Image (cartoon, rainbow, N blue to C red):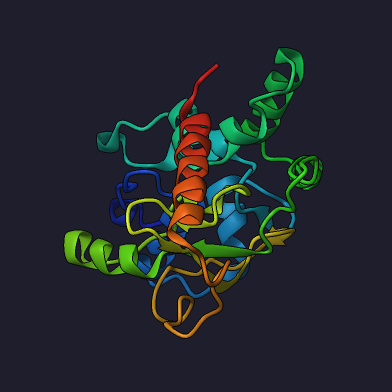
Length: 220
């Protein structure tokens, strides 16, 4: 196992946290400077870049997470990626193939194409709720990237009834860098996903957000 893996410092995932976010916190906590080796060491990838929402190498990273955290590869896929959401309406054989591909340490390119098969364009950047960011910091001492806020149909935070905001972290394509959801990535002056909403519009979009989140949590 590569020397830079100080697994005792691997963080416990937060509720509905993207795996990408967990790894970003680990990289910061462990002080890893050799960025190019992260995907190889943690995910067993022999190429640069992994998918943020539908990553490869889940079996590898599950095998190196401290045993005391009691998190399996199945739980990582189900609870910390967008697998359930993107495969909700695919046939069972295709769903199983995508699942196997995510467990293996192969190229994520076919799954990156999967998220394009929707009537709503996939977000180009990771998104966040400014109000929830403050709540996270008060509760956990740090903010993180929430899985539900990256769903294509979710444009508002139903809890705080405000628009999500775009971060500076690109979501589409492969990523070989890991950015935390901190002030550098989530500026207070970033662009809102949608502006000038009426209360009735927020009501509708909040219902869509809640139902989209439920879809991402369904295990079929």
